[in-house]
Length: 236
Image (cartoon, rainbow, N blue to C red; front, side):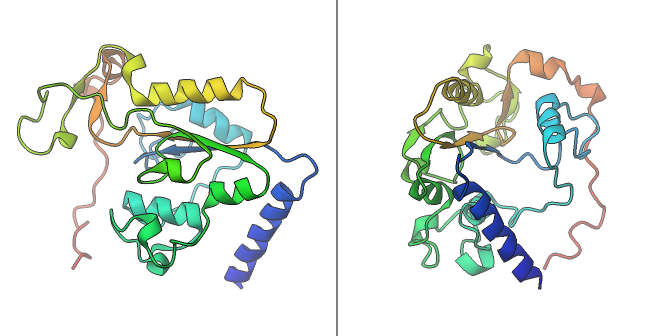
């Protein structure tokens, strides 16, 4: 019954979007490793997310939603194809979405919108890799950089675990470039309804940000997240 309800919901969504006389524009915002640390979700008491909170008040907030996988590649592949990781075989950072036998010939979300007359475009990280394959227009914005020449807080180990005040200007951050691109696109007139993907890289590591963001959270005032003492007991 649950599968039938979900299937009917999907058909209803498709008929509302693709069957409408005037097709609405669609904006998909993806935020890497955000968790539920936003004000409207209450995941962390010190989270300051006024813009996300404002969007939540304007629509529907799913307060008991769960990702399909705790790993980036399978979670994103699942969202964009509608196939669970245990169905697709994509469990970790590989295989690539188009290398998985179940998914390689399956159209993903923006491709379906394109088939229904939509202009599709994106910037930033929507899929795990090579987003340009799935959109008619794609604007890369620089990945997880920029990074300092020398590590700031973690001299040893992988550079992804480094963190600190860098760079000096927010404009150098990929997410700022991505947001600016999106604002520019939204301010233009388009001859077709559009499907726009906007993928933000942070708060994925490395944790670099300009000084003003660190100043908002003095180290001696930061509350660490709660971690159950027996969190590893159910892992084999």
